[in-house]
Length: 130
Image (cartoon, rainbow, N blue to C red; front, side, top):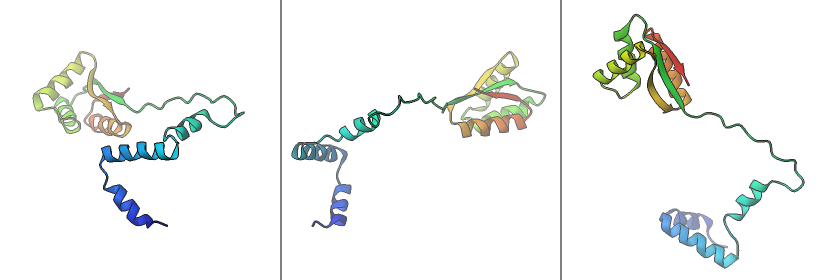
């Protein structure tokens, strides 16, 4: 039997193109397809009930500033701390919220949105996470 540890080390040194070529060669040699098990898994066991559609959990959130509150300068500092905006851009974003809503962050993770909301609300503003 082959030394499996040595085989693992050798396979780990393959480039992506070499690994793809190896996959093709093994599929031809053994008469199998690497995609076949995936298709079987997706189909599910025979006689099983129709799969229930899963509702996708939202993974991207927008942080929207709706009211700046009485501490405008503190809110600007908070917006700068959670974004990559410069002073001028952060000030413009905060002032835009005075006339309506201003999107501070777009398509961020739930954790980042919650953190940004907490920091900006701590400065006295009202924030929505959509």
